[in-house]
Image (cartoon, rainbow, N blue to C red):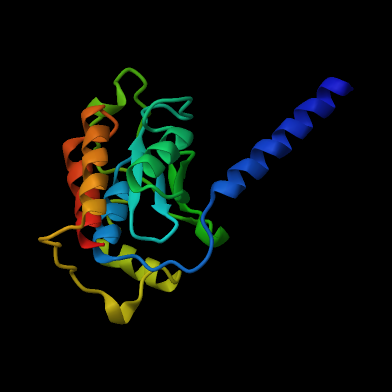
Length: 203
């Protein structure tokens, strides 16, 4: 009986702890952040999409197994990396669950239909190649943007392409260096690094 009670309490603790990591509150995505999120959605191996508390930075990892127990695709690892780079807490915006991408922010629980695909546990995260099956292929980028508008994460009247900051502050330069270190460690591939860097330069 005590063992069963212990399992129930542990399960409740884990569920509360996970919920505490999910973002809530007002959030408006920049154009660069939207593009990064669309890239995340289409990558079937992408696990959790994190956004900083101020909504100006994002990060996601990849994992070839159903439930990541460590490595760059694990939510806990990503949260540490996000805070290390951006020097602020990051929260869950979207997660992969049973091969589907679900927007979690503000308890929206919006679920995107997905293509059929298989996990790939034999390949390390940094070598995984996406076949763009994270969501249905017939869902266009414009449709994704419209969904984000309907959910309140994008201001329809303020969609524009931000200009890259040609003279970034010392703080941004420092964050890009930390991001590059993350890239060198294998946690981010070249494309993911460049997109995350563009978000920093446009913030």
